[in-house]
Image (cartoon, rainbow, N blue to C red; front, side, top):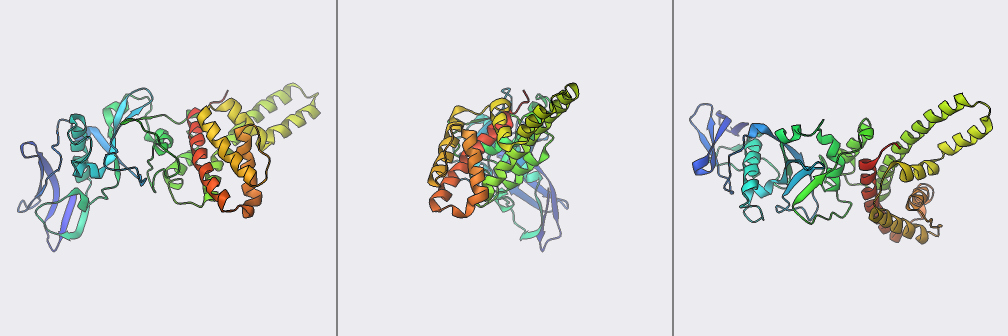
Length: 355
């Protein structure tokens, strides 16, 4: 913590929680001035804040409010923390205002937020301070339990950025404003991105910084399709290694091998292989994407295919070669495609596995 008020030389850099009075007392270096932060909630100081850390997350969806308070689990049923708006610390008008477990995390979050304040000459000296003077109250905090995170082999939050985005949250930008989020309870279970894709750091960058920003509809589709292109390049590399091995063993059938190489290089063939052999996309996600892609193709007098991934490829070709021909109705359909495409992309990144 560092606070220095305008027109005053005194500085504040340490504080303590007075449990009996439910307040934080902040004492200046000269010990002549004392500030107070009086929490709205009745905090429980059982947990040591040193055992936790906070990560700031953005989520500007209309359905993200102070009542969006979730326990965060990972796939092996380990709870790694809680996520909530800063506003939830400043209100008693939500479902967790009296929840004994949340109040422990509310204390930790309040402590860590105060500890991270860095403010110089911004406001005049005052007796009481408030977190909302220093933070955007609509900002979300993920409070991570370090001990529980250590129970997870090779834990890194980056491995869960994709599924975190699917749940609505991003490191930068606005969060996930694309897709519908069905959350029937107060628990979010995050799944780890495929370990085979960890070396492709650009995927994490996309979900941290790019997909969470405003984009034109075509640019959004192109950004998502880039992920498909990255992954089918991996498929080509895998197949090419096998091809070279087979070629070394059988030099007699060069013409047949030439045809095989040509098929390997085909983008459409690699897309089919991706969806048929490397990933598991749920029937619901596949059907939704198939329907909206088919609608766009039919509206533009293009042939509709049987397989959803072939329709996706056909949409990609339509947008690359005839973007100028799309009308307002097609643009609205493209918005639906982007939402459905994101859901499929997430499933690709979570389930990708070389057969």
